[in-house]
Length: 341
Length: 216
Image 1: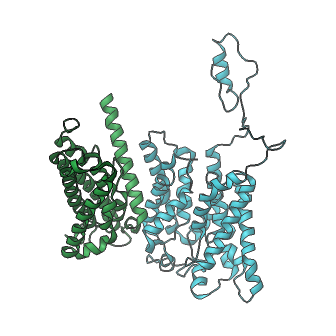
Image 2: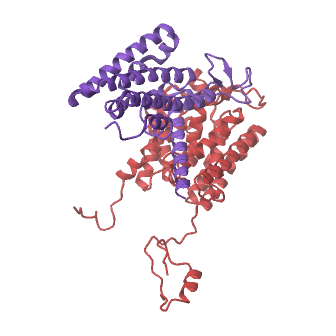
Image 3: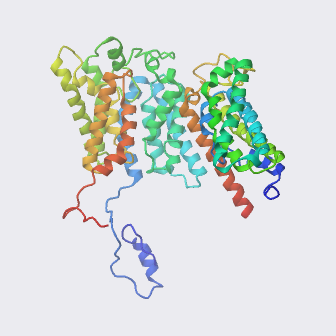
């Protein structure tokens, strides 16, 4: 009779196995961890989908069929790629854990409405293939797959995903044909009023326009413990700290509130940076990770040629995760383990 | 010593796929990554390596009784450098644009591991005919790997194949940006790394499959 190494033996297994065995254990004892919560990848991913609902709603309300088009393309490509790469690796395709769907959707929400079809399709295929499957599948990847896919698409098709894609969608998006608030501020110092910026009546990637929607969905994830609250909290605090020197200088109307609501900061902090695979394990590590993310976004926005830096900030912080994990190993109860040589 | 080991014909065939210098031995990766964003670059580099490797192998094989063990690497390098200089000057004279595009990568053939490895492994121990066939096989293998990589990169990155010399277009002229666009990343260094890694993976997979089938 074999005993599961991770948790108690399921009841039916114990019952059927006890019939031929002469001595059945009255109490089944297995080494920990003993998980009692019904936590599963599928439940977490379904939570993320629920959390993304407000963003999807805002995206559809604002960009109409263009938003639906981006989401359909990227999600389909991600799911098909997941199936294809699982087949190539000789593994059962884990489509029902919804992780591929979430990757595709997060990627789609980070694309501009005017992006051509191949940006989402190639981006999602790269996200699943080069971002995840090559490292050994879900849970093994170093970098956030959706951001890997977006970076690939951005380097491959700079015209389709660069600043111009936001400004002049040639397919005629009636509602918004203006620069994103961050691009406008970077290029001409033009400050978008905080109201539209927070609610989402601005141009941008289809999922990033409304900080309110990201906040709502993100708080739901935090309450469900699907996303660790330390990461967005650390990111917002770091963004605040980065705004302090600007406060002393005064004179600008671009405030911390603008910085927090503009671009993909809220979306990235709540939905992308909190990916459990590519973020640190310890609470202290999560604070560091979040703060580093916020600081990098602030620095890229202020001192680089790019108007927005959420994607780069996440990829850079992903690369630091093993280091953060090693640096924040908690001291076990009863003091540190004695050094054995 | 020259009687044992593979025959010249076997050495020739082995260089092409079973012991392909790039795909199986993973040597000479620097030019492989650097010059393969166009087919022209790949073909020119292959030509230069073919010339240098053949001449160096033949010459080293001819002088092999004179080689002193502690000086042999030095002699190899000087021999190779002579032929690389010839190739470099010839390219500058007759293919000036290509010579400028390849830049330092032609002179860098001097330190290309493939050539030093063939001199050391084969030419310094084998008669001329064997060394010649070995050089031809290895050069063809090198060319095969470079052309495979360059085909992927040029087609995806520029939408052309031999675009500069023959003007062959894979994507039709005037294709709308909404339908399809070349992947800029494939002509940049990251594209070279990604494409080479995928190619190596495919070759490893095919090799493992072939071996499994043979054993089964």
